[in-house]
Image 1 (cartoon, one colour):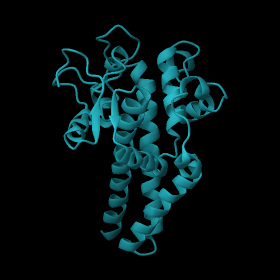
Image 2 (cartoon, helix red, strand yellow):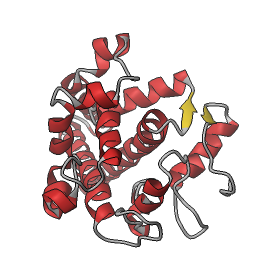
Image 3 (tube, rainbow, N blue to C red):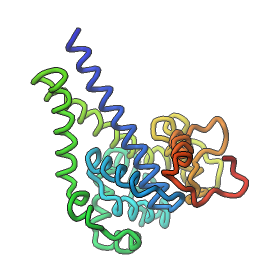
Image 4 (cartoon, rainbow, N blue to C red):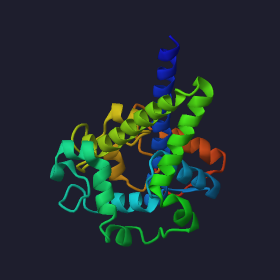
Length: 252
């Protein structure tokens, strides 16, 4: 029974980390620095950057550049990760590799992320993906070891693996499912998926997002679930986030 509880705890932690990383991705990376829909307080921005560093290893300016290119060339041959061009399963299964290849082509970042130059923290910490991921896995292993003893190292690795599969799978689904399966209430090639939105902090409302890329809110009606928007509202009350763009007539 103790082993079952321990493994269940590791799986739960891994899934929870996935949701934390998804929240930081959609609020800070996507709605914040990429589309400038909101301004994140410097203290919270650092927390988001650090969280993404130890949970995903991604460089924010690279993510922003690739996503901006996606909007500029949606579902055309120049789209970095279009299932229309590259196939559903390639985008779903190798989305991260597609991001990395385009981000390091020597052109995308310089063209689409000129406003996001690297700072001292990037050069010292955040540009070193392996260091961040290694630190994250180490923290997990140490934490589980303190609770469950030496075999907690294995539990930490299980949690890290669950998180990696969950985050990569959901991120790939936003681009693969989000341009293939679902409703298209607005005139663009992206789709809305209720279940996908639930597990991706609103990112599954992809058709709405492509219709109004600079809106901080992806949901349009009460039945559309955008958990990140609820979190953003709380952060605005705490003065940690300031909204820049909320389309006239769009319900708050």
